[in-house]
Length: 316
Length: 294
Image 1 (cartoon, rainbow over the protein chains, first blue to last red):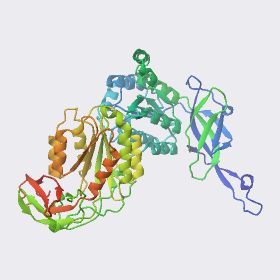
Image 2 (cartoon, each protein chain N blue to C red):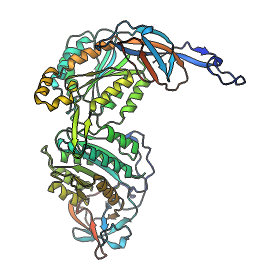
Image 3 (cartoon, rainbow over the protein chains, first blue to last red):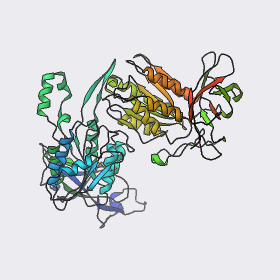
Image 4 (cartoon, chains in turn red, green):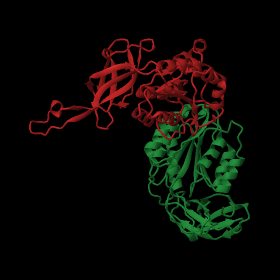
């Protein structure tokens, strides 16, 4: 969140209707700037978002949009990788995706770092930019992976806190199957903390979706993807599904159909890392005036133009 | 086993409510204090009256402790309700898939049943062995863990999971209990040897809840008996929540008996805790390591 020092004093009489004898008090406002992703109907980034395309709602009240500008394309990013035993991505695929496809995407001006879901979270060094593919770098980090547990939320939180205070937009990409265990922090707490420091969390899901019979009771649907999706929605990130996460639970009733689906939805973490990174370079900054009271406020940045989806954090 | 380097042995009974949201490493320990000799060994026998009900009104004079068959002096005794410090290890292996909701609901009931001085750590085993960093009585926090961190699938690393549970309670004083809920045997090649050794050396108490299916293995049942714990073998129709309620009841109504070993020879001794009243039965550890306090 960017708090512009130039504060707007709004006469209380214009806002509060508390009776003629009540003393009037000025309400201090600040310009709040949040970064958003604007996507078209295909999920591609919209590069030319304008003020007329969005509506800002603070605590259920529509607020005037002061400006909409493209965000700096330079990344301020931590990529959190989950390589625990339940993640269905082969180690070599992960190494090639990170070292061979994602690392070459970094350009001068970017500030990026790798992190591994572990207890405690393992961070790589800040990465040099503008260098060719280097799978050794990814390999050395993954070598630090343990078999258990999978404190995904703790790792995402630690990654986000690492970015606190740095320039916006600040982002975490988490590549995981969503099967979080051994966390000190809960999902909701992590989302709240990320929103408080203006870090968006983009999730690349490798999560399986299962329907488990429970004897005489109703089947249980196990959806680790739901947590990843919720976290991305709350923080203004984008939720992307790789291979296994794109398969439909219904298709498993038809073995041939399921095999076809597996063929059509290969696990390709590099493809989705590339896409997530590209989306982060095309975010926009939306500014609006809001009460400067140091309290949390609900936020909804909505599209006013058909066919646009806006991803923005749900509170500031 | 309670061992401390000073002349005062500190154990827990009346702990204040822990500051539940402090980081795990800063959580306070239960704080009831009693005095005993450095080398006092504390065990927590469960006594059943002739009518089958749990007995809670016996006195020190009703107990006899035999260390390698010879009477040992009882230094510490309490019939007060004991706080629960436990690691709840839930089997999430693939064979438990169709009991996921049942296990989660029952564990929730156990969480609801714990008291303000009790502390629980929730762990799972299957694709991986995982333990929450929280050993806490905060019911909201425990409920959050049950809601967010139970993921079915994988094999059954039973023994390593029990070992991990013990390791997670290693720094705790007082009675330390591992409760394992499982439907089968270890499928990962683990063995009970190191777990059994640790249970004896550090006097962990082990409880088992065997779900329908293969249930509890004989090796696990034997180990449970050796630690003075108990087990429940459930059919599909049995109420898992009731088993947890019984388990909590048992843990609350165990006596504290602290005795001084006849010889500190660094060897495993047989142990027999008996009640002199006729018809009463006692469940207690059957062996311990007669070790000097370190």
